[in-house]
Length: 267
Image 1 (cartoon, one colour):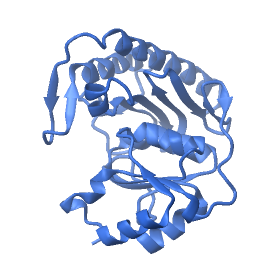
Image 2 (image 1 turned 30 degrees about the vertical axis):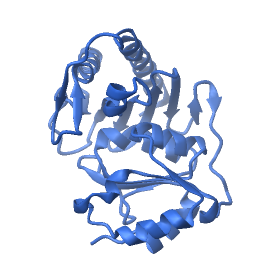
Image 3 (image 1 turned 180 degrees about the horizontal axis):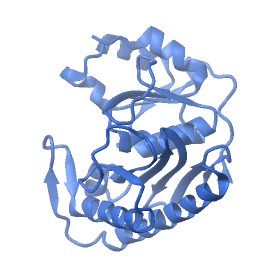
Image 4 (image 1 turned 90 degrees about the horizontal axis):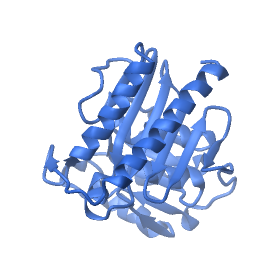
């Protein structure tokens, strides 16, 4: 993808993300239609579907040959990332959206033949846009994000650990995770994978570990973190597969091997 094409795609994507965020803010006081998907805590709202439909219609109108990978049913059935693929989560952190009316984000990524070219994570209620064009720097609104720390000790780290690790079917050694929690300075969980990736890219958090993420949860965050010198893999160190559900470690590469080799033990 050449720079001219990337810039055009970026401008459309940015405008649509900001406009969609405006739609959400304008509708906050309206009654929500809330349903569940895989379980009682897996929520989806009419707003999720409406925002995804908005993106799908715009993408297919402007770029009919592009593909869409998304959460709420308006995407394509993909078996490869060949060509130009938009990967979108219309509201990442739906439970936060429903209960708190904050701490949720729109996540949008554009991949070309499997390579992340553009990523946007929009913290809707705080009007903060994290954005990246591959090779051109990552930004928080208009402020360029710094390269991640060149020296970091695990004992001084704050980690994001998704609470799903505690589930019985998580297939992970809980005792080793507890050792990791005791080792680091502190742990957090925001309830929005996109915002957790953004925190890692911004350098205010050192790593993010999750046992269960979908492609739309992490696609934009991966590009953002890589642009500032970070790395994202599965929690066993293997490459991600952006077509399937995956585990994830994302963060400063200086602690990746230590965390994965010493504290991540799959059953």
